[in-house]
Image (cartoon, rainbow, N blue to C red; front, side, top):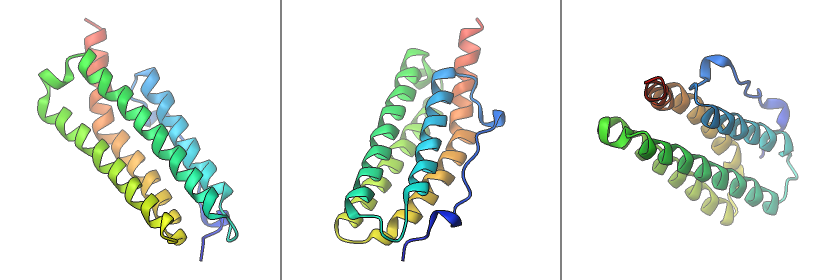
Length: 147
């Protein structure tokens, strides 16, 4: 059974989540809004096509966002100066994408009850990822720009 949107507490962006890098923060806000919008569109009668569209859009935007961050890592020398942090950051991106791809496969097999756990995962992952590895990257970029 699908959880209705009444069971979801929308994610609210706060300045405490800001990396200080406008493009990253804007994309984080967009991604979080997409997760909130996905929840609000879910009902017990949501079609499999809608589930697929939601996960495809989320995955596509997440990959776009990851490419932005990874380009910034290269541009600002993060990969060279902080290789362990950069490696972990990129690994988290790959693990996230793999999780979403696995859920899409489950949805294709008729496991539509999986959409709620993946949206919860997305919300929690975004919160954790932004508060840990993205803040480190943001601080690094800000330090580079202030020189």
